[in-house]
Structure formats: structure tokens, C-alpha cells
Amino acid sequence: MTLRIVAPEAHHRADWDRLYAGYADFYRVAQTPEMRDRVWGWVHDPSHEVKALLALDEAGRAVGLAHYRPFARPLSATVGGFLDDLFVDPAARGQRVADALIEALAEIGRARGWSVIRWITADDNYRGRSVYDRVATRTPWITYDKRLP
Image 1 (cartoon, rainbow, N blue to C red):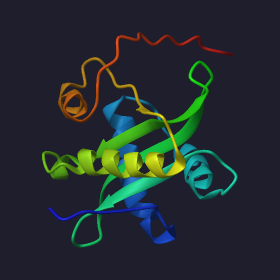
Image 2 (image 1 turned 180 degrees about the horizontal axis):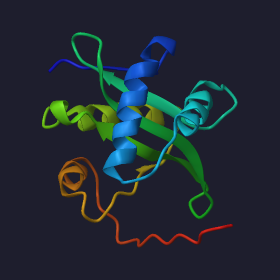
Image 3 (image 1 turned 60 degrees about the horizontal axis):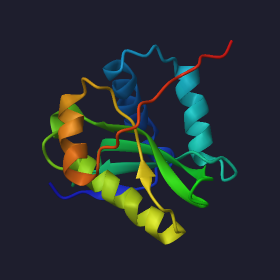
């Protein structure tokens, strides 16, 4: 599959919605259209840190998405990139769409002087982890969440 990686534009909204809803379903997260509206707004707000990439197939249909943002790394006095969301249309899996999105983000990171691209995934995301094990190094860090009211 020949892919083109782009920043989403207004005419990509329906494809982005479809992919982002699929991502939420994969992680069993209840997500409303209003929530997607908010994230779509962030992605297109020049002053907001969250940005996005879409992987387009030969027909121009979005088959993968990635959301990312910079993050400060005080201990190393550098800035890194955080890959918040990565999702590939189930029909396009196995065709290196995730690899292409991660590499496009790495190119952005190199251009911006980032020291690392970092992401987390669910322990039982075996298919995704097989990609991640191929393109990056698994860290020994354990993640915690403290929920805030």
C-alpha cells in the first residue's frame, strides 16, 4: 500500500471521526460527538499543543491516525514528543500504516529537535506491541494515574 501522511484538513473530518471512534471503541472508552468536536478543534487550533497526522491510502481515504504533542523533559533539559493516540483501520492492518505514522512523527520530532518520541499502550495490545517492539525500545517504566475529581 502506498501511503501519504498528512495533517488533517476540514475535508478529512468524516474519516478522522470514523478512525477516532474506532480508537475509543478499541479501548472501551465512552466517547461522544462533543468530545470528538473538542479534539478536532484542538488539532486545528494553532495555539493548542495537540496535533494530528492521518495516513491516506491511494484513494485518499484515511486509514490511520496519530495525535501527538510536545512535552518538557526537565531531567534531560530537552523536549520530547508524546504520541497520545495511534489507530489503524482494521482493514488496513498488517500494511505498515502504524510504522509510517510513527516514522512521520519521528521526522517532525527530528525537525523540532525533540530528544524522544514516547507513548504508552495497554498491556494486552499484543498486535500494537509487536509493531512497537519493532520500531522502538520498550522501557522499564510503569505508569500510574491519580484520578482527579
